[in-house]
Amino acid sequence: MAHSAPGTLAQMSAAHFMPRLKVVKTTRVSTPVQCRQCEDAPCAAVCPTKALVQENNAVQVVQTRCIGCKSCMIACRYGAIEIVPCELTYTERPAGGSTHVEAYKCDLCGERAEGPACLQMCPTKAIYLIDAAVLAEATRKRREQAAVAQASEGAALGG
Image (cartoon, rainbow, N blue to C red; front, side, top):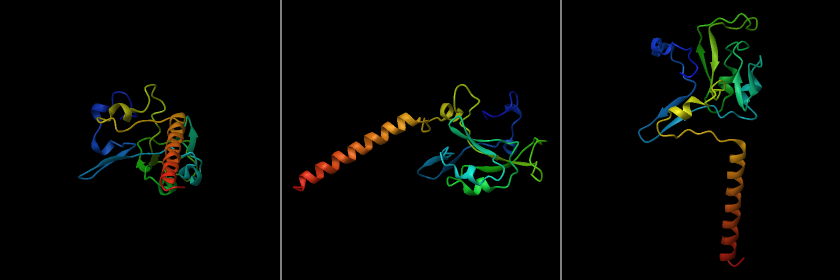
């Protein structure tokens, strides 16, 4: 709903609600299916019109280039892209492209100063954003712990 035009929330119906991430629920677990903003983004690599681009540390969809071919949806290993009906007709679409569908995926709410809306709205705070420095530090600590554990195990075996 963060991408909805101001004043349209009261008019929104289930038929017009197109979320950019889905939640899969089972009896024991619920988890979001969301874009992982891959550095090597297979979805962007297969797009024939280069409608998916790396920008602001996220994979963004340039809707005016999207022809609705579904290549990105098929290439996404996480199932995070959907091709949905759109209400707008773009005059700048490539020749032969559909004017009735477009690729939808999480774009980390790049236009929101507050950051991704899902982070604020998640009732259990299970969704969070990790920057590259935090991820690198966590990886370094895990490798260090694994090395210490392996050295301890080797010493215990008399090695």
